[in-house]
Length: 346
View 1 (cartoon, rainbow, N blue to C red):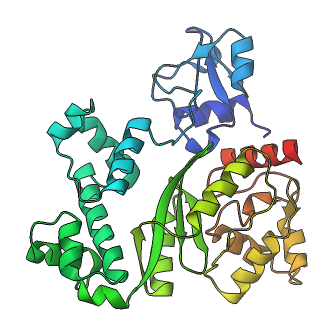
View 2: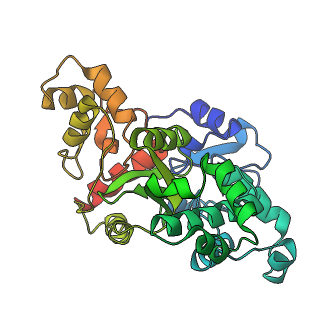
């Protein structure tokens, strides 16, 4: 990216996350290098230089910041939090209280703060939601309401019914007629992602810090008359396997079934995206020509922005007419990383 020193300095002042992975801030007076989003006190512009890799920073004698940990993946779920999530996945009826967290060596306030930042709810609220979601899946699979309630850790049917209705807006018995969209979290070198799938295939794959994520969830729920719940899906195992191979540079195409939800025009645009070869790019104008709508450049760009299945439907391969990196829902730094990685393994 052709960035001036002034633009990069502005980015660190604003803690602009779209520049994560694009550059590091090396501070001459302290000898450390940081992420653009580092929360430490900002140095004066004359006391910094900007480098574009950790290797370059080390070669110039800088050491990593202890505050922002620039060598770790941004937005990655911490191992201790991942362990909690795994325990809940194995047994949704578990109820971790503050005392239980301390026994595990965790500070309840830190756990609460992480969940508020990443899920907009406390850990206790997350646990309740997870129990409700687990019960909903069991009801969908034919289990009785009574068995689903008690197997998921609820102490009474009335309490379960009230909680269920307050979250989903209908009674547990009414849940048997609703479609389910399964949701899971998965870790990648670029951070944590959410994946959603139906029986037909994957309908969403987005980074968890995507600004339009809540809007996309609502759109899927409304369009498919469905409830999104955390749970397993037959397509998730293949997705995780193929994504792992992709990030390792050994996979160039995906075989995971895709369930695209959008207008006829959007689906036409997304289908064209899947024909852009690995390691190559296309301009919006070229993409519009591919769908025989050469004058619909802006509409094509809008459709790209509405793509809900990152990487598998590779909207990151579309750039400006001059080759510049235009907007990307996952952040410009991720777009740059993906293009660089594909070019290196082409």
